[in-house]
Amino acid sequence: MNTFRRILKFFFPYWRHIATAIIFSFLYAMLHGASVYLSIPLLDTLFQESGVQSDVKTEEVNPQKDSTIVPGFITDTFNDISEKFREYILSGDVSDVLFKICLIILIAFLGKNLSGYFQEYFLAYVEQGIIKDIRDTTYKHLHKLPMSFFKNEKAGNIISRFTNDVNLIQASVSAVFLSLFREPVTIIVFLAFAFSISWKLTLFAFLILPVSVFIITFIGLQLRKQSKLLQKDLGSITSILHETLAGIKIVKAFGMEDYENKKFTDQTKKFFRRILVKVRIRTIAGPSTEFIAVIVGVIIIYYGGHLVLVEKTLKASEFLGFLFFIFQLMPPMKAMSSVNNKIQEAIAAGERIFEVLDQSPGIENKDDATPITDFKETIEFRNLSFHYDDSPELVLDGINFKAQKGQIIALVGSSGAGKTTLVDLIPRFYDPTSGSIFIDNVDIREVKLEDLRKLLGIVTQETVLFNETVRNNIAYGLLEYPEEKIIEAAKAANAHRFIVELPEGYETIIGERGTKLSGGQRQRISIARALLKNPPIMIFDEATSALDNESEVLVQQAIERLMADRTTFVIAHRLSTIRNADVILVLEKGKIVQVGRHDELIKNAQGIYKKLYALQFRDN
Image (cartoon, rainbow, N blue to C red; front, side, top):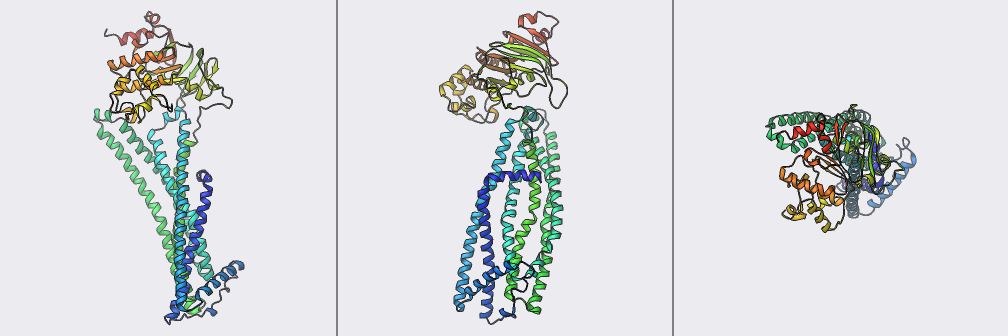
């Protein structure tokens, strides 16, 4: 139940709305009970007027005789109020009595429905507010998590937690609200009316509880287990769908439709079987409880009829009123019987959401983090080593070098040498396993994270754009930025010409991940975004490797403009683009094996750089 208690913490900001909903729930139950209770004097009036006399006269039935079983002040108070109410209604001739009963019934039902409306509204406000807060809290926490979390977690599984799991909590919260706030009040009020008529009959009605509690608890535990497995399977389906949509071109190109179809249908078949198990478990709770209720109801009818016809200690109208109360109790009791199931479903979904919320950010500011506003001199790597959490093998081993302000540092090496990992450590996407990175002789772990990242601009091979306008993508994170500055950045990135040719120019929506643009166009918008940010340190991670020759020329020109007067780290796929670099670092198996300029490194016939260069330009 610890998970459910954590869910309940989201209730606290809405305590005023909850309190208001409870008040209206109480009014609803009271007026609902009163509308049913009015049937007793109505029946008495109708029986008397039609000449059908009750077998029991009012004075023969002692409303106090059962009160020794329950606290006297409760029954005395309730009976006094009841008797005065009956005296008022039954005073006057038959027409007056009928008019008063009908008018009070009308008022009671009007009040009941108004109370029900406000009760539903305030409960819905709380329910939707809680779901919104859970989504917002989880989404905000997601941004704090380290890159290692996203590396190990499937995107579809994360999306499933935001959609399927939160929706399941929403359905559960709705049911729990009704079951824990409205239904108990209804049950208590109706029980009070029923107790005032006959405590013996009321106790008979509750013979159902011990058996039903056992059945409900057992079913709820099984349902919780199945719900957790079901959400996991649904996350797998979402993940497969996400991967297929992202790689649909490759699927078609390799003729893998049948393979992907089988993979997807295997997962949906597994989900289908699992959900049938859950449905069987969930649907057995209601019928089981209802059948037990019917058994007790038959006993009540038999015993109550005995009191009316044989013992003559209960009026027929009171017995009919009592039956109304008992059978009106069944819907809220049935709803209450499923509350544990709903709680178990919420717990199963909540556990998956709290798995995300319980993930430690890992990389965050120290309490006394140093603010930094500018980069002045050097970036230095000292004895730096790194390995990912899921593997003890070092990706970087003993890295030592210093970059001066304004230098262009190129990183080359074969695939898997550690180039991208090295530059990912600068913005603290990861922290070193050992060693440190210093910016102006301050360990970057001592610097405010947000300040550090403001100093950096990053352009990667896989350009990340958003389904917004060209303008908003270039000015990402910059509110109300001057249009002339945006256009200036676009021109410097060789992007202005194609942007103005788009259907709506800078206001054109470019689609998810910029799918309406070519690779070169996306890359130039990415460069324009970096230019507008105007950071003193730039990182290019194979920014031109996926482009055609014409696009590469345009992007390379934009990159050269962006590198001017900046400290730049370049991971180069094509060595021709780094000939003018101030320092070239050659990496092999996580170590720096060569350092120098292009002209120096090319002279070493045995060096890795020479071999890479010769391999790339062997056709020339």
